[in-house]
Length: 131
Image (tube, rainbow, N blue to C red; front, top):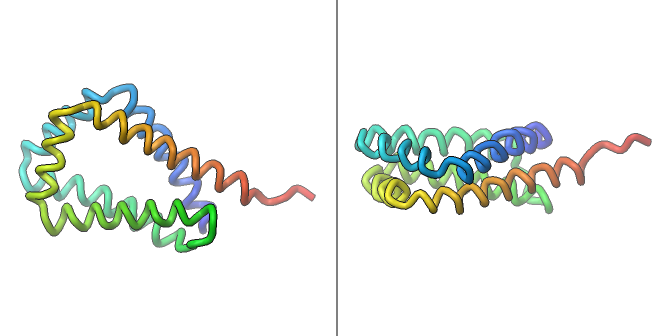
């Protein structure tokens, strides 16, 4: 199951990260529209983080190196999503900052590419031997 989660993280994080780097203004606009929805927008954004984090945590519970980074990433997403669902006004403040400064999406893109690359590394390190 852990390999499947590592594939999931690699397959999702790499294009999302590239999109953040190449289209930060579009991400800013998406957050502007979510922010304009008020608390429902915060719930939608939080729900996406919670769902993604829950998938990672449910299938990748190992704290052994190097996979612990993937597990930790999943728990961070769970915390982010839970925070948005329980404190939507705080989430809206964060979304407002993202909307105002699309450069923040570039940083998020670099981090997403890094976690995607790390997932690829985990897949490579733990690849079944052909002998």
